[in-house]
Length: 345
Image: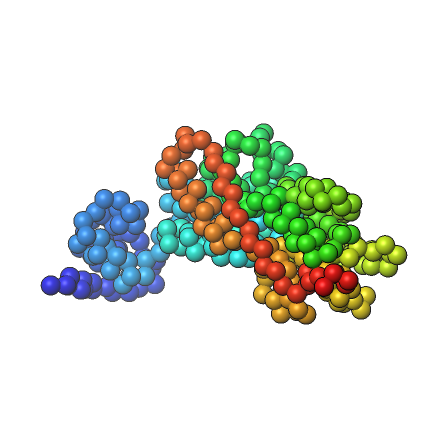
């Protein structure tokens, strides 16, 4: 037989509902309601009565008071470098979904690749007594992590810091960038320009993969580091399109920069791959809709977010566990923008 529905009689007033009011409505002690709210040991019957009374009274816990009585706030901090970047938008969704399933909240902060803003938000996380932090640091802040101390566990995503200090989830950036170069070279492209961001360890790793693959094939390395946004990438590539020895292919290190590179081609009246091949990172929706479609490395962004949360929860259970670095694989999605060079069909 199914469990009977618990009936709770409540009289409403303008006075804020307190935990004693909930206890009276449920016919249980205030201590029992407290255990229901805090997920402490309580029988199924009492838990049902308490939850029914909470719903009926409209009681809302005083989170500030609870925070003062506890070690943390059942809140996950998430600091990302640029929420306009679809990669970080998708990452934030994956983290929030996992936190919701664990009955936790997420505080999202966007730094715009600014170390000063990062420092401000890190102080905020300390003040909020968060349970744990998922963090995509700039290169400047990543270098300083060895000198920082936190009262909560930290998991780095997309970007790494000093080894052996914090858990981290990244993709094989070196291998992914090399795969783009190899794909373009196999299609007959030899003058391959690399455009990379200038603020993160991720861009450095992708540059290293690009360089290794170019050198392995005896090709001339031609790389530029610019601000990791669409405008900077558009300007950087636009400056090269008028050169007599302009590149015949471009590798771009993130989705926003790839958008900027595509805009530069359109502004110059050029098309990929007819005039110049184009490939980059992040399988954003627009990349399959423009022209013949853009060749990209698809990052397992949902898996990155979920894995980061798994590492965080495991760190909470086993605080003395050795730090771990999880490296996931990107997937090459070949489309028309990287087609064969003229004369190599």
